[in-house]
Image (cartoon, rainbow, N blue to C red):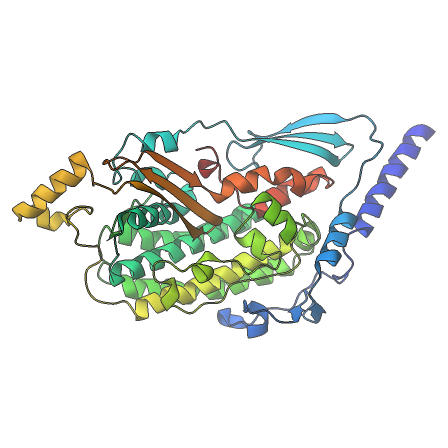
Length: 471
């Protein structure tokens, strides 16, 4: 009996030491100041500009951590197991409700500390890249939005940008603006769903229902614009499938006026939640050096202080013509990944509003009989359009021989598309470098040394979808 009490006391003391090893820069109280009402935020809090100070969680300004400080916090927050006792191997997933999709991680545990992790992603066997080699360039588009099915249009968009570069095809201004608008709607829907699922993984069902309801407003707009709510297949080589419908502008403005207020409410709920603060602050630290080593991009990289955003650094579509800030945080933990996505929702609403205000007139798809599909309304009344439709659908476009790689900023990170052509109507090789694939393989360095109870929060914070991981 005494031995049992001694072991229990030792475990409790060990847990207390681990809690005390958390970064000490945050305050003891988890109560945070409420953000400005109606989605209005201060420039210092939500600007992507680089300054010398960073607003701390308690509202006071804190010095931005250096790389050495981040490494020290990371070392303090993780337990180093040198003389491990009895190692227990545990399979987490694919049936585990918090393993998003059919992801499986085989964990070696010393008590509740993760000693090693071995991820497994090969449970889908989708074969999208091989299927693409058997289809014409137009027919590949419906496959792409089944990759990251929560950000379907972003997948469509990245593929079309690559093929257009290979063809030397220029997209009309109106088509570029509609693509930008739809991409940012996609980003908003993705981040809202991510937030609901992330909080639900930590044990709160109600907040998931709130986020799911708010995401429906964005999906209603997608249904109005594309006719589908999830897998849109809306992008076309040379532009988009159709123009903005009547009354779309008014309804879209109502949603983007409403969402920043909703984000402020999300932040009031989450920042003032002591449980979330303890489970997210200083947990899962992944520095910019770690991100570079494991090719981690998107919100996770920007939460480590790197203002890398392809919409700014390598503009495509209409991003060079709109004004927005790159969301950046500096503590590289689960909490900052939440802050990054809330900032990005606000910036996306700004971009959508600018697209609606500055939407140019003119065609929304390039008029190129050799490479693009004609408008359906023209096919039924014009013989030349009918011939063009027949050629593109049954034979496919003739693409110059060559190869190209194009990267776009998808909601989860950098979405790269490689296409090689042999001069025929079908691609010789297609490869998608999707963000979830690289984020999923970075799970071991993210969680080794952490407690098993933190795996759920850390894994959710990097936003992995298995559809674009096992391709």
